[in-house]
Length: 470
Image (tube, rainbow, N blue to C red; front, top):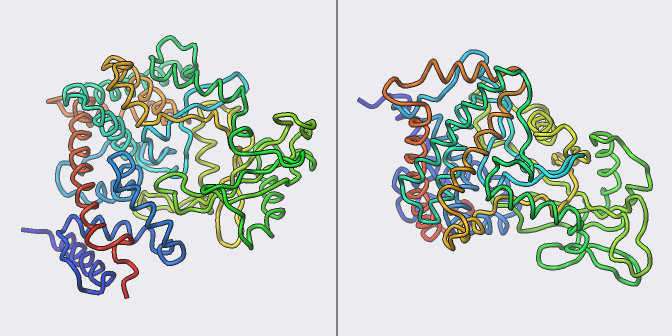
């Protein structure tokens, strides 16, 4: 017998899709209907106000497994909240129900950060951060390397071993945190256990930080005056944002981690709107502002003390936070700011981080740094296929990712609560790592199937999934 309440929710879902599509057009199977309605619910206001950007996002999502993963976090968490079988069992326990979550730990959200001591590995995108059960994060984090590394045609056995290594590393790191009550060592370029993939990523990031590549890449000199480049991705800043830019920057300085600084540092030299960045956040507003910094460039010099900050629109997180019994902290800019501070691997990272809200739009503000390299999945896949990296390197990567996630989750005396919850709920027939590997394989199979369904729906319903059909 089908439970009445889930059945009613499903009928309401199908009715919603029919209303959005005008009740006509090609019929959708039940899973496709769920995918379409979840995306429409998430992007409803953007479809009305920025339809071209939403269409670009959907086209990008349909182009491959990794961009589809990046654009469907809301679908993933919606699935977890709907399961009615053994997949509904997620790890949780006393003292570990609400911990700061990164929110969406796919490989391209992990990369190179910089603190007072140099470069280190950390999460570099906290848009989805929120407090919730650690099991949600583990399930999402286990899917990410499984899906990404499958693109390099690694065998199911290797993919399963990578996930098990990730799970074992996570638990081991939690136990160390609890036993020593000391923070885990940061993963740096000289860390012998980081593995080849991470070490090379950190080396690349260090060079880019040292060369301040963002100025050479994104600015140009015209008659001795530095300005931001204009091209297909950097366009003129529209009103009212251009007019409000001084107010935005002044408000940001009140929340900046390093303080307001000197007025001369924040003299506005130029501003643009950034397009075509990210996947899930592609339709979001992004403004880049060139600031004078400590000193102007000498005539003909490559750069002076100028620096660039980004104001990035922050929208509601993909997790159904209302179902957790609480909503985001303050506005979304504040939510991301608070979550980032709770999870940064080093307390001296991101000194220019801040937030601001204007015209009903919440922004995260931080410095634009080309050295903030991520684990680019396409590059990683190419290097695996070429033989530069092998299965052992993937296992090293999984170990490092498990430690990174545990270090964030285990702060604020949460390590013992999480480790205890895992031990209490562990299946006697298999280890925690085995259960995680099985879940990742199930989720990866669903992701591949959903990508096919989404691609067909995009062809059948049009670039906005019929959401604007008259």
